Image 1 (tube, rainbow, N blue to C red):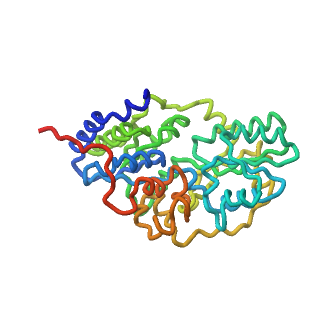
Image 2 (cartoon, helix red, strand yellow):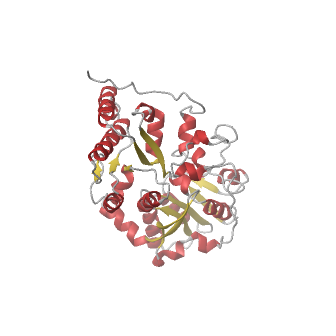
Image 3 (cartoon, helix red, strand yellow):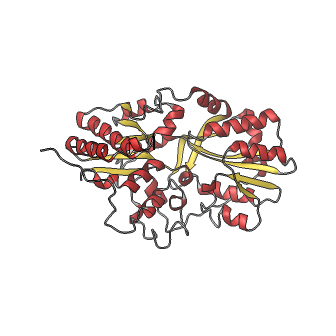
Length: 376
């Protein structure tokens, strides 16, 4: 299958693995930022095939997982209102709030609908002028342009019954927070290719320079990730710290200028809470003053809710790479994809879900790719 098979070629994978083993002389710790990358790494067993001293840890790059519990509870409060049609992408419906989730609300006859685009929600508002249509606008820089376009479209149509519940987060401030942590573990990053397809990589250059960490913009297929690891290891072994682009087939230095312009027009940078991590300054997007009328939090006055995380969930440690899902006493027992205690187990990009779907309830871990062949 074109554009897939060439990035999953076993012979090339063996060659890259062999080169990684030859290049990685000292122990290093790399973090892949995106949950999609985590799923490929775990599903393919890539982390189990790397040299013993080369460790991959998983970053906070799952948009569903980092949406703060307080905002999930606000979504539940809005969705429970009789005049509201609450819309969201499907992966948010089973994310647990303090007491329930959106899927349970829908089972109790609340009007919760899955949409495939925020513009679908705008069209719902056009068709149902007697209802308040709310879209749950979560995600990183990848989903922000489409959400911005939905707000602009509603503004163009002068729709009084459309609003968005915004929980956008930004990747570079999260990377900086991880590097500022007293127990800093990360020595190099594999940056998320789709985020960079929108934003480019210029924001990462000051991070690489200030913290002396290599940042490699990386794709999502097995060969992308192996090449990204190799590029990062080469820099570390050579004492370099710069931004390199492995995902050149999709990413340009300045990203998508029109998408960035839509984000800049509709949103402003704000402090944002990350689930399990806490508030990171300047790490989120909120509606700009011109579009504040479309803010569902203000329209439905859902401030003052008290959120409570499940005491057994260690999602914060997992999202910062401090611990692995199999370190959690609830993993695979009290917490499963059917009975998630935290978002990382239910999201399609969650680290716990990746481990669970790969059968990592207890070792030994599965190995899918063949072992590297060393030349004599």
